[in-house]
Length: 213
Image (cartoon, rainbow, N blue to C red; front, side):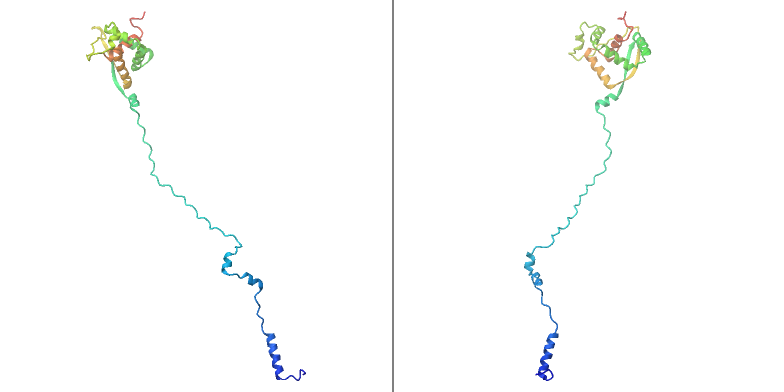
């Protein structure tokens, strides 16, 4: 049958075929896309492409040091009893016979030494001879007898000069620790008084005494 002789039936078939050919074609999902779409379980088990980044550590806070009270300046250290005693002084008086006093004045004028220094120098220079010198002044034959005191008795009164000879006083100030040494030495050598101890030591120490030629 020719094209011109197509009947209505053939025309409908042709229109249907043309409509089918002209209809839009829907793309089927690609094979690769189907393999990429995995189930949630497979997604959890699949390795991640990028490594997990650990969260940045929080900064460590350094605790503040506790507030301390302002330090007050330390109080000055008080000197010990020994140091205090060295700085303290007391009044001491020497009563010397006129003959000894003249030698004291002459020696002081030539040396410009103070009276306390002169007394201490005389004691140190004659300390080994003081027991014998004190015993002679007291009229004791044996110096050791003057050192021992068995009974609590008053010390004998000893004149440091003759009845007609005048005495001269020399007031001075001496350190208390030096006076304590003099008092201890007085007991050791048997002197009845501190004054006699100083007089005997000065008489033996100063030039111009009776024993000098």
